[in-house]
Amino acid sequence: MMGSEAAPAAASLPSADPLREHLSNRRVRMRIAVCDYAGHPFQIQLSRHLASRGHQVLHLYFADLVGPKGAIQRLPDDPQGFAIEGLTAGGHVDRTDLLRRRQQEARAGEIFAARCKAFAPDAVISSNMPLDALPSLQREARRGDAMFIFWLQDIISVAMEKILGRRGYFYRLVSKYYGLRERRALRRSDAIVAISDDFLPILRRWRIDPARISIIPNWAPIGDIPVGRKRNDWSRKYGRPKSDSAVSPTCR
Image (cartoon, rainbow, N blue to C red):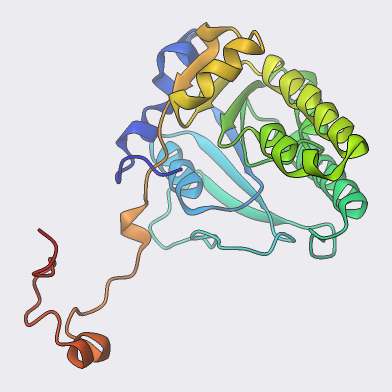
């Protein structure tokens, strides 16, 4: 889901009301592990912003997952305290074989947890992590006395119920199992950042403490989108635009 087009809302993440109490007892300069399984652009942008505020930030993504990625290399103007690493288990994630995928995602959780253990963060921000990967990561956060922030992009078990529920009784049981696992992961989180208030009804139904929930919409990292000339082969072929104006005459 996409919200505003700029990052300031997300940039305020560490000072959002439900998080302030958790962070107030910690030192100003924090070690933060941002674990984004997908490697999406705005999660990386947030990591860079947190590092620019003086925090030591390790951004982790799963390199075995094929899909769109953000700026996953260090840039010349990156803050000194920013590092980014792609983790791998040695093969692409197989999305077609459910059993193998479950094994791969559980293994990914162990790999993320091991890297967090070596980094020893004060806080772990988890985004897009598969439900089978979360237990290992949460256990490591608790072991290391790190705050665990669940950046809630989707309620995965609801989607599973809609898709798998059509396939028969066994698959309905599978979706219910993952519903319990997702609920447990949310309850064990110190704070939850949901991207929409549309998630609030189900979080209330799952008896998640509302004091631990913040709503921060996703944003588009506009600065990471390459911009070309508006006068190009396509515009010349179709006669639009006649100038470098950003708005087509039909967009009124």
